[in-house]
Length: 246
Image (cartoon, rainbow, N blue to C red):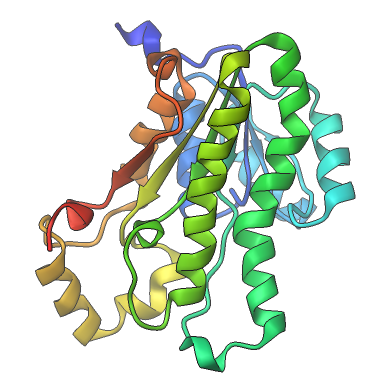
């Protein structure tokens, strides 16, 4: 049974993996046997993180830059697993957003996934094998004040993932998503110091706590492994039950 989750001999590119959830996912995939490519914009940071993970390599490029993505994937060569994790947020009421801020969120959270998936798809189609995992959010389904723009990008990412399934499933490519709830990462650090938000979260989430970054790894390993070969176009919520209750 453990062989179903074995990623030995496979190369996994994890975008935005120099810190936070991306780094935790890279570590989980490496522990399952994958050769992990650590991605970020800064070569020095990618190399430092890769040095911490056995067998990992640095893959520095800007995932919002079409030419940089194409060149980065070409340098890597074979990519068996793509994890589209790169993302950011900006908490602000919609009426206060500038067009530049909106486009920046869209580029980082959604367009980057399109560019990376488009870059690896031809080789996966040729091999008739591939795994694509996008990192959506509980906000792909739920709305909350001040995160409307973020939720719009993650909702778009959910449908992009299903679109990948529709286009590429016949080539034995599985495209699925994980949808994390509230994880204790650098991205959510301001909220972790907000006592009122902490109280709301403990009441709203059935598990009654923040999630730790390592708790997302198992879901991604499952979706990257042979264990999910007939799972396609699905959104796996890892949110402590938040999306299951009102």
